[in-house]
Amino acid sequence: MVVPGSSVLLIPMRSSAPAFRIRSSAAGICIFAFSLLCAFRAPAQTPAQTLPDFTFFRPDQRPFTGKDLPKGRKLFFVLFDTECPHCQRALKSIDQQRTSFDKASVFLVSMDPWDKIGLFMRTYAPHLKGQHNVSILRDQQYQFIGKFKPRKFPAMLLYSQDRSLLEYEDNDETVFRFVRLLSGK
Image 1 (cartoon, rainbow, N blue to C red):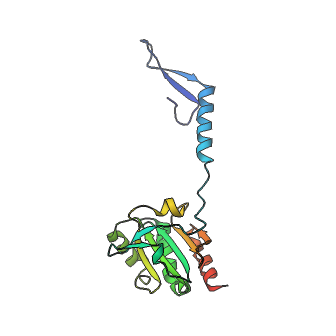
Image 2 (spheres, rainbow, N blue to C red; image 1 turned 180 degrees about the vertical axis):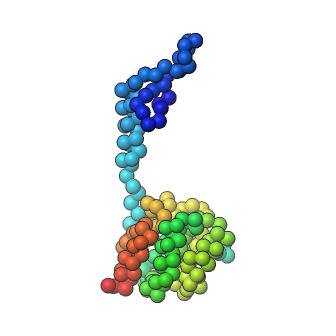
């Protein structure tokens, strides 16, 4: 057993001596350090460069797939978690700048239950619900993360009309980048 915060290895003893003998183990330290190094060097996911196939669900439980996407518009997807403070700030900012998103179709996707999604929308993005270009969807099959490959919440992905990735962001303070891209400024 390795003692947290030290380079000491505790080895169980089979005698009537004290229960553990303290012994420094260079090999154990090296194995532990290598394990940590490997864990932290794992590459981050690269967001999907082209829009993947998916099936999400509308509030009435009808499936929503790539076939339901409008043609000739930019597609803005936001994956959010209802209890994520960064998601709350991002959606509040999008709500406040909603007219800047008029040129895109907006898809707000969560894996949370509908009751939590509804409360979230009423609290942080009350003006987005009912907008002609906004769809609120539930990822009840947990596909978004595996297919769109976001790095963290909130995941914001803007795809072109030909369904190639234009911009990815997961920082709630950078919603302005999407506003600029959509307004052409």
